[in-house]
Image: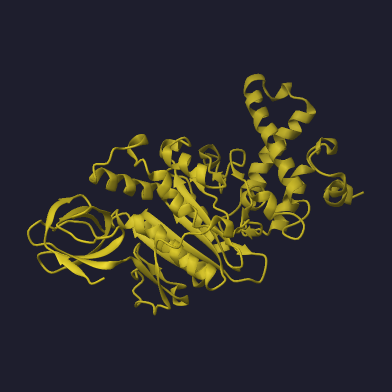
Length: 460
């Protein structure tokens, strides 16, 4: 379709412009907007009617007017240039270089909205991804092809955790592994932190970064995760990489959705967010997975900063419906100086059981995880009891569970930001902690596994 230019802008509102008397305009079509000074901006058709189009402008609408603004409809959807030259590079939210380097030579131009995946072509996620973080690898294992969000709060170290996962994540086979990192609405200081973290660790050569800063247009945040996932799909399904996609912060993404919805004067849903936010989030999260007869995979770790630490807020609530579990960061644990402050009790990985065990991690993995979870939960309950009756009233058995909970947080959950534990080290640490408890209480562990791995059994 030939490009057509219009000078019929009737309204400029927030990040949107309304163009009248249009013909054959399609949803998602890319446009070029030229202001009165001749400066070009890019946009995308958000809604198309018989003779009217609503366009969201990526660079913002400051300086645009209804008299001199010209809009050129290009007749095609937004496409992202992809190639293996993207590794080690940093781009803005729409795929333009942010690191001072030139444009990469594209091998292909791919639609940023991706291709629909036939559900029957999906392969069930089964393989383990090692992050080097015990509360994840040991208790809530990440599996290739899974989407597993981190629920955090303002002031909690989710950026540090995201950077550590990006640096340390690996598969336990010799297959190719890559990380695509997408940040939305972050500060310049946070962007520098991520860049420095990746470069100093040497991990930057396997990472592709898409960074949308807080002072960049909010509309660009809607494009950023889709650009990142388009790159991930190219690497996974055409170059056979196993790709981990980290998306931070999805709360900023949803705020951008709300801003656009308000500019369109849509009827708001819960707490002012668009009623279609569930569908929109699903269009991002469901691009994770494995496809039959393709070697690569896409695993997603979205990060959500929960407003007021409210897990029932629409963003974490809707995310939880779509994804397969969650890591929950705890403010009380953070105040104790524990890093990463992952609270394993409300955390969950629904696909964990299929990604661990003999041939993947170790035969005792599930048993150790379940027994530690039960013991830590009992120890946490005893802390509440101690606050009422005092520790002197506890039995000897209760004191052991209380000690287990304290050591679990201090030794198992707590680790340095640069500490990269193997899954074997994590499981051995788990056995060391379980040796505190009476052996007769370890009822969730098979007798053969107990005899093989329990420190007491080894010592005769």
